[in-house]
Amino acid sequence: MNDVVDQIRERIEAGRFRLSDHAQGRLNERSILLSDILASIPTWTVVETYTTGRMGPSFLARHILPAGTIHAVWGMINDTAVHAVLVTVYLPDKDKWDEHSTSRRKA
Image 1 (tube, rainbow, N blue to C red):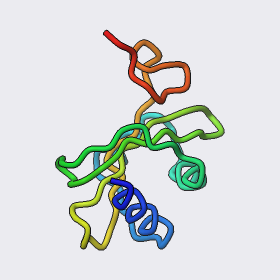
Image 2 (image 1 turned 90 degrees about the horizontal axis):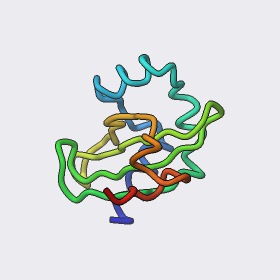
Image 3 (image 1 turned 90 degrees about the vertical axis):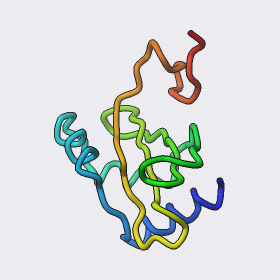
Image 4 (image 1 turned 60 degrees about the vertical axis):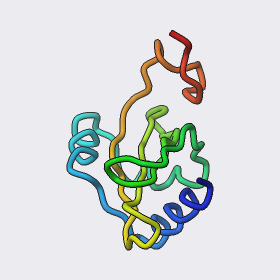
């Protein structure tokens, strides 16, 4: 899965990414700036990886922004896709995530 993370990072850094309609809506709702997310990519933490999904192989990343921590799901239809996709963004629920937003709390 590290290959997918690297491939997605390379696409983002080359400007070859797009936002899903869902992600755009979440950014607008939460007043999160895409530029802040992009600026935090060098220090993101990959929290979970997914081998399949609507957007293909994807992963959940923790981004530290000036306004606080968010989670973002980044994906790619397949390894030959031209663009990476920002699938969604959300604020980690403190009841569901540890204090660093990197591990799910046990139910």
